[in-house]
Image 1 (tube, helix red, strand yellow):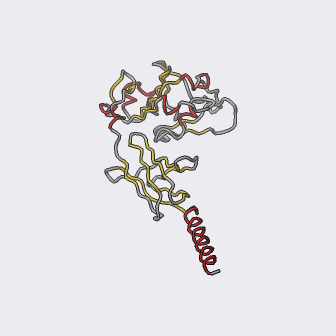
Image 2 (cartoon, rainbow, N blue to C red; image 1 turned 180 degrees about the vertical axis):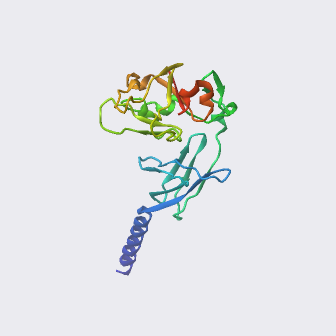
Image 3 (cartoon, helix red, strand yellow; image 1 turned 45 degrees about the horizontal axis):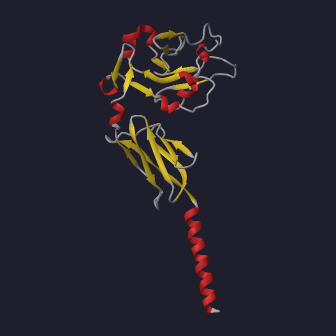
Amino acid sequence: MKTKLNAILTLLLACIVQLTFAQEKTISGTVSDEAGLQLPGVNILIKGTTTGTQTDFDGKYTIKAKSGDILTFTYLGLKTQEVKVGASNTVNVTMAEDASVLDEVVVIGYGVQKKKEVTGAIASISGSDITGLVTPSFEGQLAGRATGVQITTSNGIIGEAPRIRIRGISSINSGTYPLVVVDGMPIYTGDTGGVASTNALGDINPNDIESYEILKDGAATAIYGSRGANGVILITTK
C-alpha cells in the first residue's frame, strides 16, 4: 500500500512539473546592435509557430512563450539569431552585422553597386523575401519589410493610391509620396487636388517584381531632382 502511495505521489509530482514547464510566461528584453544602439522594428517569432512581435522604438519587446521555445530574431542587414527560452523571463539580444548582405548588388538610380560601397541610406528587399506573398498590390509587399517606410490607406475606396512615406511628413499641403521608378521608368503616384486618385501602381503584378531598392536620403534628390525629395522606390521586374 505504501509503495502504491509513493508511486502515485511521484506521478502527481511529475505532472505538476510538466504543467509548470508547459505554462506560458511573459518574456521581455531589449535588442541592440554591436555598438549598443537599440534596434526598433526587429521581427521576433517563436520558431515553428506564427506567434511573433516586433521591438518598439526603444528596441524593447514582450512576447508570451514557454520554457524550451526558441525565439528567432530577424532584422534587415543583420544576422538572424535564435535564443532558447529558459528559466529567466528576460532575454536581451545583441545582433551582429551580416557581411554577406553587404556584398549584394543593388540598384542605385544611375547604375548598380555593391551595397557596402553605397554611402546613402538604402533599403533592399530581394525576391526571396517576397516569394509566396499573396497581396493585391505591390505596396502590400513593402509593408513591414523596409525600415522607415510607412504605408497607410486613408479610406476603403477600391484602387485608391496608398499613402507611402519614406522620409516622414515633409509638407502639410504638398504631397509626401515618393517617386516610384519601374525598370528605369518613373511612374506617377499620389493624389490630385485632394481627391483620391486611382492607384497607377495597381497595374503592376506583385509576382512580376524581382526586387525593391528604396533610396531614403538626400542622395535621391541629387539623382532625380525635386521629384525624389520624398524618397525613391526602385522596382526591378523579372
